[in-house]
Image (cartoon, rainbow, N blue to C red; front, side):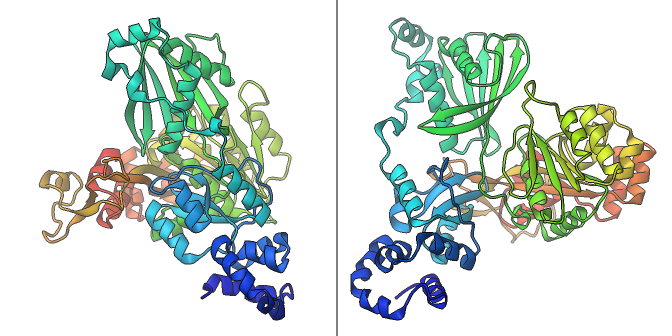
Length: 563
């Protein structure tokens, strides 16, 4: 029996006179086998002559999913918890983007609800389907299913080159006899593994100027991966520099740049930071994830109360709104989602970023490459003459950028930006430390959204758990009823034994009313502002975290760790 989704599609084709019942009956027997093996879309195109472009458009319209017209740059990506060939063979899904919260899949048939629900349950990710026309899907399928030998996983076993496991004597002998893999291949394997494990950063730490310690930041926690022999302590940093917009010969100075590495034939965009230490250079590579679609604001993870607050904030014209938190906490994702929420033909929205991390159709996005193009300040000043309604700056790092955002608010724009700060209230003092006028800031700032990530309990090994009295005390839950158990993960193959899989954000939203504004202007203390904000309904990140721990999404240990 045909699925509900197939019936909806066929009904729409009949309605538009693109298909006749007579033709359906005539080729019904011939098409039945193809329907089972190749799916409804390919059968409609192959046996009934339906135009593949129109078919994709109809699926997009009827099921409200994006229609991708250009597959250049698209490639299959690994997905935790499920084999790639299972997605292709059983569901005709091709995973094209996978990050901490979301999996984007390319499809050719209608988005069958039971298949989407299954994938969501297995991966614990939000599933975003995008439709391709039949020929494009087939091409992407061929690229995925029949990779050339050079695209096979790089055959390097980290255990085989780990000094911590094999010893210094082995490392010295291996270097003398030429047994070590070349640096470029080791780096490629490190990046490939970081992507496969969904790590956000790769840290290269020099040990006594000789060994090179490699760590991944996985689900927000640093984990050692391998300690490389002395032979790599100079060659790998050199390969990293040569691949990016950094000085290959520059040592002893702080550098920042961007690079595109080719891993298994795919382009991987990264941000590179280099800083000298007493032991040598410390290098961090941030894996930048490209999105086809920005996450809808209601799917970010706000509580109902906080969602209502963010919607209220976004309605303010002539204002400054900040998205704050430590590096890698997801604040840029929330900024993008907010801009996407505000996008409308009646609004002129512009961003200034370094780099552009997600493309949003309908928004003017300006990319700044430090040292090569105009500066952030020059781009922002230029936009003052372009009748902008909403201006977003990727990140405030210096006094001049902060002052220009305040100026934007004072001149009638809604100005958004991100800022590295510990929490919402402390971001005010962070801006003060940068040297901005607190009096002017108080006039235009209307709200501050702070966030942090915590690890989500693995759904594959979740079980009931009663934290000990000391943990309940630290979390402020000493009066938790004896019969109320929380949750935790026991550890399994899916979560690599950690008990956690993926991450969720915690939020606090500080609404700047007249009283808070006055307190900022008069230089009131952190505690005074917090007490006043709490009297007006403000709840901090720890409160949101405990709420999510009580709901069985994360653990009290995680909340105590990050807050």
